[in-house]
Image 1 (cartoon, one colour):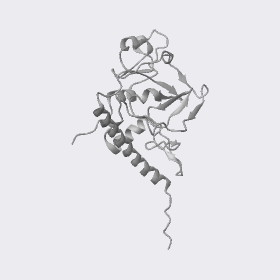
Image 2 (tube, one colour):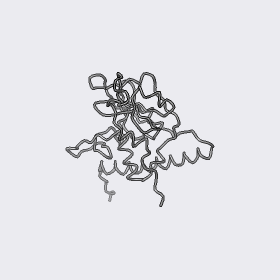
Image 3 (spheres, one colour):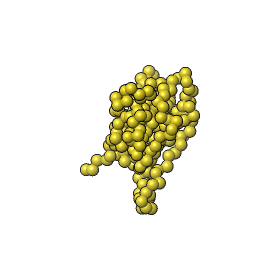
Image 4 (cartoon, rainbow, N blue to C red):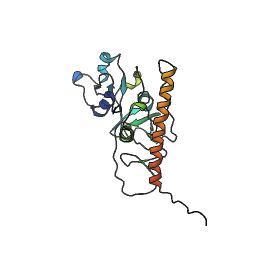
Length: 228
Protein backbone atom coordinates (compact mmCIF):
# COMPACT_ATOMS: atom_id res chain seq x y z
CA UNK A 1 0.00 0.00 0.00
CA UNK A 2 1.39 3.38 -1.06
CA UNK A 3 1.28 5.89 1.75
CA UNK A 4 0.32 9.49 1.07
CA UNK A 5 2.69 12.39 1.45
CA UNK A 6 3.35 13.30 5.08
CA UNK A 7 4.70 16.68 6.16
CA UNK A 8 7.23 18.09 3.66
CA UNK A 9 10.63 19.14 4.99
CA UNK A 10 9.87 22.89 4.79
CA UNK A 11 6.73 22.41 6.88
CA UNK A 12 8.64 20.48 9.55
CA UNK A 13 11.21 23.28 9.61
CA UNK A 14 8.46 25.85 10.12
CA UNK A 15 7.29 23.86 13.16
CA UNK A 16 10.61 22.93 14.71
CA UNK A 17 13.05 25.75 13.95
CA UNK A 18 13.56 28.42 16.60
CA UNK A 19 12.62 31.94 15.59
CA UNK A 20 13.19 35.29 17.29
CA UNK A 21 16.44 34.17 18.84
CA UNK A 22 19.85 35.66 18.10
CA UNK A 23 21.67 34.45 15.00
CA UNK A 24 24.93 32.75 15.94
CA UNK A 25 26.55 33.85 12.66
CA UNK A 26 25.82 37.55 13.24
CA UNK A 27 26.12 37.96 17.00
CA UNK A 28 27.73 41.39 16.74
CA UNK A 29 25.20 42.76 14.27
CA UNK A 30 22.11 44.73 15.23
CA UNK A 31 18.65 43.31 14.56
CA UNK A 32 19.99 39.79 14.20
CA UNK A 33 16.85 37.97 15.31
CA UNK A 34 16.01 34.98 13.15
CA UNK A 35 12.58 35.86 11.74
CA UNK A 36 12.84 34.24 8.32
CA UNK A 37 12.48 30.60 7.29
CA UNK A 38 14.50 29.44 4.30
CA UNK A 39 12.26 26.77 2.81
CA UNK A 40 15.03 25.31 0.65
CA UNK A 41 17.58 24.97 3.45
CA UNK A 42 14.86 24.20 6.03
CA UNK A 43 16.38 26.52 8.58
CA UNK A 44 15.69 29.83 10.30
CA UNK A 45 17.83 32.82 9.36
CA UNK A 46 18.18 36.50 10.23
CA UNK A 47 18.04 39.44 7.76
CA UNK A 48 21.85 39.51 7.60
CA UNK A 49 21.81 35.93 6.25
CA UNK A 50 19.67 36.81 3.24
CA UNK A 51 22.57 37.38 0.76
CA UNK A 52 23.58 33.73 1.22
CA UNK A 53 20.00 32.62 0.51
CA UNK A 54 18.99 35.21 -2.08
CA UNK A 55 17.98 32.58 -4.67
CA UNK A 56 16.00 30.47 -2.18
CA UNK A 57 12.35 30.57 -1.16
CA UNK A 58 12.11 32.76 1.93
CA UNK A 59 9.11 33.01 4.25
CA UNK A 60 8.72 35.86 6.74
CA UNK A 61 7.71 34.80 10.27
CA UNK A 62 6.14 37.32 12.64
CA UNK A 63 5.00 37.24 16.25
CA UNK A 64 1.65 38.11 17.69
CA UNK A 65 1.02 37.77 21.43
CA UNK A 66 4.07 35.47 21.77
CA UNK A 67 2.88 33.15 18.98
CA UNK A 68 4.38 32.78 15.53
CA UNK A 69 2.25 33.83 12.57
CA UNK A 70 2.74 34.15 8.83
CA UNK A 71 0.93 36.17 6.21
CA UNK A 72 -1.91 34.33 4.57
CA UNK A 73 -0.90 35.63 1.14
CA UNK A 74 2.52 34.00 1.50
CA UNK A 75 1.39 30.75 3.08
CA UNK A 76 -1.37 30.04 0.59
CA UNK A 77 1.26 29.89 -2.15
CA UNK A 78 2.60 26.77 -0.42
CA UNK A 79 -0.44 25.01 1.01
CA UNK A 80 -4.24 25.24 0.93
CA UNK A 81 -5.29 27.32 3.95
CA UNK A 82 -9.07 27.06 3.53
CA UNK A 83 -11.02 26.34 6.75
CA UNK A 84 -8.19 27.87 8.82
CA UNK A 85 -9.32 30.97 10.70
CA UNK A 86 -7.38 34.05 9.67
CA UNK A 87 -6.90 37.26 11.64
CA UNK A 88 -6.32 40.82 10.48
CA UNK A 89 -3.30 42.39 12.14
CA UNK A 90 -1.95 45.72 10.94
CA UNK A 91 -4.13 45.48 7.81
CA UNK A 92 -2.67 42.09 6.85
CA UNK A 93 -4.32 38.68 7.11
CA UNK A 94 -2.25 36.20 9.09
CA UNK A 95 -2.65 32.64 10.35
CA UNK A 96 -1.04 30.96 13.33
CA UNK A 97 1.55 28.29 12.57
CA UNK A 98 1.24 26.08 15.64
CA UNK A 99 -1.58 24.85 17.85
CA UNK A 100 -2.73 27.01 20.73
CA UNK A 101 -4.44 24.52 23.07
CA UNK A 102 -7.31 25.86 25.13
CA UNK A 103 -9.25 23.92 27.73
CA UNK A 104 -12.99 23.99 27.18
CA UNK A 105 -14.54 24.46 30.61
CA UNK A 106 -18.05 23.76 29.45
CA UNK A 107 -19.82 22.12 26.57
CA UNK A 108 -22.14 24.42 24.73
CA UNK A 109 -23.26 25.43 21.28
CA UNK A 110 -20.49 26.89 19.19
CA UNK A 111 -17.71 26.20 16.76
CA UNK A 112 -14.45 24.72 18.04
CA UNK A 113 -11.11 23.77 16.52
CA UNK A 114 -10.83 20.15 15.41
CA UNK A 115 -7.58 19.65 17.33
CA UNK A 116 -7.29 21.99 20.30
CA UNK A 117 -10.86 22.98 21.29
CA UNK A 118 -10.25 26.67 20.73
CA UNK A 119 -13.43 28.64 20.08
CA UNK A 120 -13.73 29.72 16.45
CA UNK A 121 -16.03 31.73 14.29
CA UNK A 122 -18.09 29.76 11.79
CA UNK A 123 -17.43 28.33 9.26
CA UNK A 124 -13.80 27.79 10.33
CA UNK A 125 -12.81 24.48 11.92
CA UNK A 126 -9.02 24.92 12.33
CA UNK A 127 -7.38 27.61 14.46
CA UNK A 128 -3.91 27.15 12.97
CA UNK A 129 -2.03 25.58 10.10
CA UNK A 130 -0.79 22.84 12.42
CA UNK A 131 -4.35 21.90 13.38
CA UNK A 132 -5.41 21.56 9.75
CA UNK A 133 -2.37 19.45 8.84
CA UNK A 134 -3.05 17.09 11.74
CA UNK A 135 -6.72 16.88 10.76
CA UNK A 136 -5.94 16.03 7.12
CA UNK A 137 -3.33 13.40 8.00
CA UNK A 138 -5.59 11.82 10.61
CA UNK A 139 -8.61 11.50 8.31
CA UNK A 140 -7.06 11.10 4.84
CA UNK A 141 -3.40 10.20 5.47
CA UNK A 142 -2.41 12.25 2.43
CA UNK A 143 -1.36 15.88 2.39
CA UNK A 144 -0.43 16.02 -1.31
CA UNK A 145 -3.78 17.40 -2.62
CA UNK A 146 -3.32 20.42 -0.34
CA UNK A 147 0.28 21.22 -1.25
CA UNK A 148 1.05 23.72 -3.99
CA UNK A 149 3.95 24.11 -6.34
CA UNK A 150 5.87 27.23 -5.45
CA UNK A 151 9.23 27.77 -7.12
CA UNK A 152 9.86 31.33 -5.94
CA UNK A 153 8.94 33.12 -2.74
CA UNK A 154 10.59 36.45 -2.01
CA UNK A 155 10.46 38.94 0.84
CA UNK A 156 9.19 42.48 0.68
CA UNK A 157 11.74 45.11 1.76
CA UNK A 158 9.50 46.34 4.58
CA UNK A 159 9.27 42.86 6.10
CA UNK A 160 12.95 42.36 6.79
CA UNK A 161 13.02 44.04 10.18
CA UNK A 162 12.01 41.69 13.01
CA UNK A 163 9.08 43.00 14.95
CA UNK A 164 6.99 41.93 17.90
CA UNK A 165 3.33 42.73 17.40
CA UNK A 166 1.90 43.20 20.88
CA UNK A 167 -1.68 43.65 21.95
CA UNK A 168 -1.10 47.32 22.73
CA UNK A 169 0.40 48.01 19.32
CA UNK A 170 -2.35 46.71 17.08
CA UNK A 171 -5.98 45.75 17.02
CA UNK A 172 -6.79 42.19 15.99
CA UNK A 173 -10.07 41.44 14.29
CA UNK A 174 -11.46 38.13 13.15
CA UNK A 175 -11.84 37.78 9.40
CA UNK A 176 -15.56 37.40 8.84
CA UNK A 177 -15.65 35.72 5.47
CA UNK A 178 -13.61 32.78 4.27
CA UNK A 179 -11.96 33.27 0.92
CA UNK A 180 -11.98 30.17 -1.24
CA UNK A 181 -8.44 29.58 -2.39
CA UNK A 182 -8.06 28.33 -5.94
CA UNK A 183 -5.70 25.51 -6.88
CA UNK A 184 -2.38 26.57 -8.38
CA UNK A 185 -2.65 27.11 -12.14
CA UNK A 186 1.02 26.46 -12.81
CA UNK A 187 1.28 23.27 -14.89
CA UNK A 188 3.03 21.84 -17.89
CA UNK A 189 -0.17 21.18 -19.84
CA UNK A 190 -3.93 21.01 -19.81
CA UNK A 191 -3.88 17.37 -18.68
CA UNK A 192 -1.94 18.29 -15.53
CA UNK A 193 -4.36 21.16 -14.95
CA UNK A 194 -7.38 18.85 -15.13
CA UNK A 195 -5.70 16.31 -12.86
CA UNK A 196 -4.98 18.96 -10.21
CA UNK A 197 -8.51 20.35 -10.39
CA UNK A 198 -9.93 16.85 -9.86
CA UNK A 199 -7.58 16.21 -6.93
CA UNK A 200 -8.45 19.59 -5.41
CA UNK A 201 -12.17 18.89 -5.76
CA UNK A 202 -11.78 15.48 -4.14
CA UNK A 203 -9.79 16.89 -1.22
CA UNK A 204 -12.32 19.69 -0.77
CA UNK A 205 -15.22 17.24 -0.88
CA UNK A 206 -13.50 14.95 1.61
CA UNK A 207 -12.80 17.79 4.04
CA UNK A 208 -16.31 19.19 3.64
CA UNK A 209 -17.75 15.74 4.40
CA UNK A 210 -15.62 15.38 7.53
CA UNK A 211 -16.42 18.96 8.52
CA UNK A 212 -20.17 18.43 8.18
CA UNK A 213 -19.97 15.32 10.35
CA UNK A 214 -18.08 17.22 13.06
CA UNK A 215 -20.47 20.19 13.02
CA UNK A 216 -23.48 17.82 13.05
CA UNK A 217 -22.17 16.07 16.15
CA UNK A 218 -21.47 19.38 17.87
CA UNK A 219 -24.83 21.03 17.27
CA UNK A 220 -26.97 18.00 18.09
CA UNK A 221 -30.10 19.35 16.38
CA UNK A 222 -33.11 17.23 17.45
CA UNK A 223 -35.02 15.43 14.71
CA UNK A 224 -38.78 15.97 14.54
CA UNK A 225 -40.97 12.90 14.54
CA UNK A 226 -43.24 12.44 11.50
CA UNK A 227 -46.84 13.59 11.82
CA UNK A 228 -49.27 10.77 12.50
